[in-house]
Image 1 (cartoon, each protein chain N blue to C red):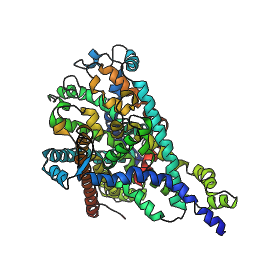
Image 2: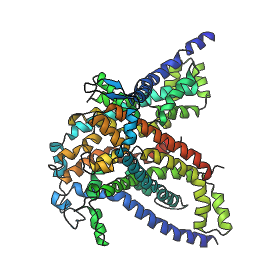
Image 3: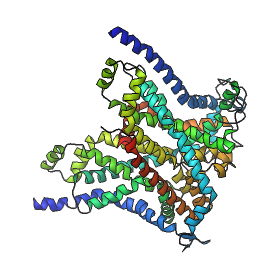
Image 4: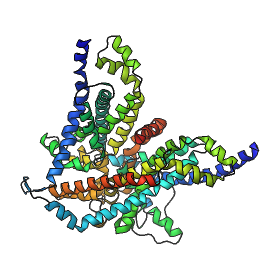
Amino acid sequence: MSRRRSADGRWPWLFVLPTFLGVLVFYLWPLVKTLYDSFTETGPFGGSTWVGGANYSQLFADSEVYRAVVNTVVYTAIVLLGIPLAVLFASLLNRPGLRGVMIYRTLFFLPYVAMPTAISLVWRIIYNGEYGVLNQALGVVGVDGPSWITTPWFALVAVALLGLWMSIGFNMIVLSAGLKGIPGELYEAASLDGASQVQQFRSITVPLLTPSIFFLSVVTTIAGFQLFDQLFALLGPTNPVMPKTQSLVFLFYDAAFVGNERGYAAAVAVLILAVVGLLTLFQFRFQRRWVNYD
Amino acid sequence: MTSRSDRQRLGSNRLAHAVLMLGSLVMMFPFLWQLKMAFSSQAEIQSVPPDLLPAQLRWSNFSEVFQRLPFLDQFWVSIAVTVGRTVGQLVLCSMAGYAFARMSFRLKGVMLALILSILMVPSQVYLIPQYQIIQQLGWLDSIQGIVAPGVFSAFGTFLMMQFFKSIPAELEEAARLDGCNPWQTFWKVVLPVAKPGLISLAIITVLASWADLLWPLVVTSSPERMPLAVGLATLSGYQGTISPGVLMAAALMAMAPVLILFVVLQRRVVEGIAFSGLK
């Protein structure tokens, strides 16, 4: 028995070490390295020198950083609007006796599984100012649409609408899991009491979905502050609108891999980490006010 | 009474269908429009007002993709990266997840805490040092360079650990009494039972690797060594010279594998995303 135990004693390492060493080398060490690098400056020949908080004071004096934060907030706010839409669609899909649920589910989830950079090319043409189908449709109702992807604020809205469109499928998956957890007797009792469907939706469905809605708002906010793929693919990295539309991650990418300012880029990465951490903390603090746990 | 409420429900299901159809039309429209454009000439795409259907099916857009873009090279890079990451994660995450769920060893708590601590950290924080490591290994612009960091996953380890915790321990007891060592128990008894968890992890990893942009963008520089996601995103240099119909055909072929995977495995994909999303 004791022999077996000592033999067992080595087995766990075989199972754990590959992952642990990989995480150590590719994630934990880089985390420490980036924190350190954010206090250094890259020299012209690749070496780096300690500059104390200089990168951070540059960061807080940089109007581009503030603009990127504002852009990211606007983007995230628009994508968050996808949550109420997904609540509506998911609860309609959850109605007893509804036919074609599988077909609807497939159609709603397609944007979520589509490849962002590929579908962005399609949206780029849909958004085109001259022949894009969006502006032609707007023209039918008498609205003169802008040149979406080359006009500062409209470009950001265009990116956000794409983000919203892509997120609805994921939101619906999470919400439909939440809806399955609501006992049917609640609705039966409410019907017997004469509550209308709208009343049932407001006083049963929405309150009991708040844990799922909370989860989605945390995940959406975290993802929103890491906006990069759709921005890069829809607008293109050399788009003249980019300085006014860029996100924090684009700023990071640009500083690290285009401008070769590794130290400053590291400080931007630390800022992203801090903002995401603070927002998540804030949402967890605030959740007591509105999230319902039985 | 029953018939009245049935009729009511039927009536409002009609309204539900109307709203859902409108919603799915918005979800579907870009795909349908893309399909149409992939078969259209440049003039047809740029015509005002738009034609709802191309005058004829121009298959030439698809063949032109292979002539004008390094599409096949990029396609194979995407396949290799996706397979490499997915297989790597399935093996490594299930091993580590199993040890954390079922074995006891020194420093287990510390190691688990260290691995899980990276879950909350945005990927940009690792990016520059990861790039430098790949550079020092001489792996820039290579498949192993794109794959390397992505085979280690805190999320996958956590997912598999949670899954193994839910499996009854009697199975392993029986295997142990039959004389299996821990590796044999894991390989022959535990893994087959863990299929649903492995499938969830595989689906999430496939979707994420196929779509991944930022990391392969910084690691690769030659067009024929980029995965499709990077190839398509960095097309702006070609844009004057390639007709939009060809771009649409390329985009369509690039996303076809994941779309087909999704339509065929719909239930599994949905379950996989729900499972991972809620943990």
